[in-house]
Image (cartoon, rainbow, N blue to C red; front, side, top):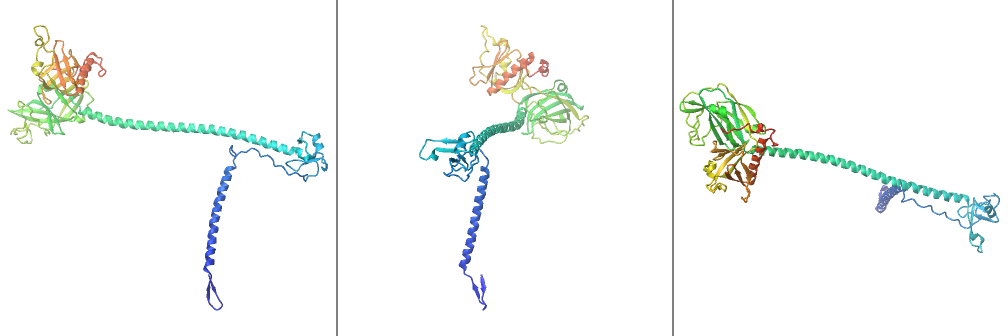
Length: 498
């Protein structure tokens, strides 16, 4: 602060007084804030404690006795006369009465007499009617509130139990609903994953195919029909099957084992002198075909654009020529293009019937078994002159075969990819079982009624069990007792050995 003197000089106030002033203001502010907080807490606690409960409900306190005096009321409460002599005052209030008046009216007032002492007032206690009524009402009110609070506590317990039960029930319903949703989502996801894996396994599973040609385009000098099975992923040819034009339409083709990851190429061959020319070709991708449906009829478009050149797998196969572009001479099964002109395709569509045999009754697998001379041996050569069987034991020589089981007919191929079976036999009357002589359990025995007995070794135990299962189910299907076929005609109308 600044003060101006009459002479014009400026005087500055003491700075210590200013500091003490601000300190006092700050201290008052802090104290005011703390008091405000304490008052608020006290009001809050008091508001909560105003509600009666079994914890804060107290028994009525006894009335406080007055000090011994004659009281301020000079008139008797009963007779309304001056109470100077022979009077007594109530021990809890200033009511005064005559002792004879109380004795004459004992119902309204009560005097308690103790043992006589020197002081007469020491053994006399007086309770007026007002104090007695007040104590009675206090006790009555206490017991009434006690009963009410106990009832409320019981009701609160029941309500809490009901609410907890309802909450538990609602939570359980929500949990069940969420669990059902989770189980449904898991089942849908697992079904999708399992179905995808199952479809992949079904597509990768090797099965036997029957291909019937319903009609072909009319091509001059058409002499041969060729089916080629090609794995497009590996760019590798698996099978090549050649048949004359008439036999192909009459008999069809049997493909001894292929998966659904391959493509089939139908080539129509025409002859020009000594050369064989590919007139047209059609493609059927098995990955686009439903492997579960039977007797599927597909219409294929014949094209002069050759997508796959059939390659020869054996020396005696016929060599084909391309109709348009020439291929390198180093390619397998390709000869130089002839100079003769091409013949156009008149009708560019053909129909085929695709039928994949059931994997329940058919099987394709590698197995080690008797050689070809033992398989072709007649039944009489298995019996010696002394009447004992010669072929009951396991032959010492073993040959690896690619065997196709087709409706109780075993077709023996030299290797996987061979199109002509070396031997075919029917095992309808034979019995098949897994022999216990093999320690690994992958050997089976086929016993014929004419005392022939063949033993085969599979690569795994699962393949051996599948073979026995396929034979058993095929026999049940013939009798009409199989759960996989409705009647025997459905089973026995697909394949015949020519």
